[in-house]
Amino acid sequence: MRFGLLATLLLSLLVTVPAAAQPDTQFLLCSARNRENTAGYVSGVMAVKPGSSADVETAWGAMATSKYSALASSTGCMRFAASAAAEARRDTMLDNMRDDGLKITSVSWSYATPTPKTAAPAAPATPEQSAVAEVPQSKGYCEQNYPGVFDCNCFAQAVLHHRLAHPEEWIEDQDGRRRPPVHDLAVGVQYRLDCTECLDDQRLMAWARKTVSGELSYALIAKTITQAHADAYAGCVANAFPARFRANPYLDKFLAAMNEARISCGNARG
Image (cartoon, rainbow, N blue to C red; front, side):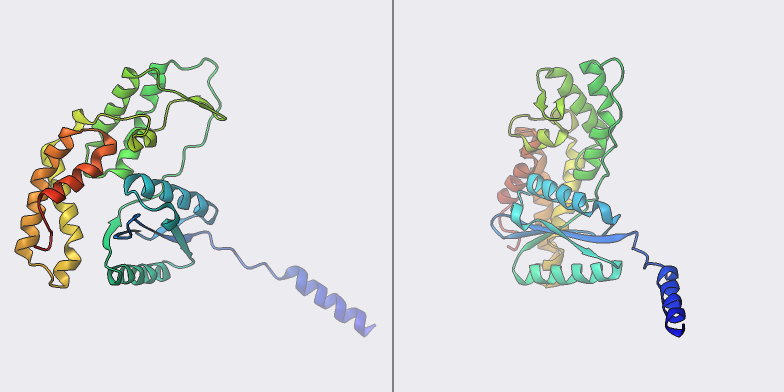
């Protein structure tokens, strides 16, 4: 009798003890290196839903390889339960990259949750309607990947104009028949976006100056370069960049134009 009562009490405890709550937020820190292992790219700490961590990591890898020519095997994201732990690991990662002699880029990037697919309309949209409907998506792509480089309203219109000028560009795969995504225009392997209508010299100069100044900030802290030299080099690159980009104004040549501007200005460290 006593044994039966004890068993009943234990069973009731097992039934009534609630399961530990699962965290509803996870913190991700993403990084990558270029193929030559001379440059490192580090994201900010991002708060995401645990179920979307894999999607974030995939999107980071696609962005890093296309925009920075990062080595695919070097791209990845670490997961943390607390923001403070992620920030501490980010500081350590930056220190390690500096110790390895890498040029570091802090990437202002965040994951944009894909728009859920909706049922197809009863009547198929015309190519013109499809192109116009894509404008908000193109603007969002610009804001995520090219902040400060373009006026993103203009960028979205450039994509629209490209779609209307190239009605023959379609992809047919297991998902059906669709336009090549904007990402394919940025890669430039088969489809290319002419950015001429959105090239604003003052905007490009301001972006280039800010970018180069940020890259030289650690050298200034370490006192391996003077402020005067850093300002002169950043100014030189800023002045050279617009002309280099205008000479080959395709989106996939954006980074090449910046690198050409850097080379034309000599060694950043004098």
